[in-house]
Length: 211
Image (cartoon, rainbow, N blue to C red; front, side, top):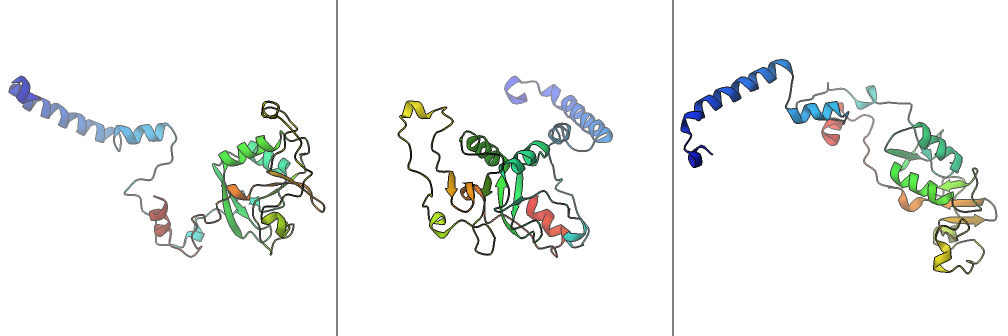
């Protein structure tokens, strides 16, 4: 800039002003303006220089987890969960007693799916949501349903123009089973290979993974 304008006399004053401004800024606060904006907006931020003591992560991890059960959660349970919790995702566990991690589902997907399911006439608050298929879990989908077959009456004849906005539109997401009644299959939206760490992993290692 100075070479183009020929204002070489302003080089030294500009350097002095920049150095003074930097010194004053460092005296009153830590980090640059971008880091301060992150803190003001409440965005999670991990400092590059942040360190944790060499201890197992189980000593600092939260134990009272907010989870979704794999195939016993009802539509009403999920609606209450979304209304009371603001987490962006939920671990999917086998049962509340066993608490074996089987997947993870995003809040945005769960919210959209709940609104989609509620438009079906046959769906009620007690409709069961299936999020994982495992022979070791009770209430599993029958094998034929797991392969893609649908236990439902034939699809009614609905024209494309009538299907939009109609509460009785057929939706393959919802299935009627002789033993379980009306259920909703959400397995497609569950990440069955989420990132997880062993409780014996060091806290410093966990920090590096999620930095």
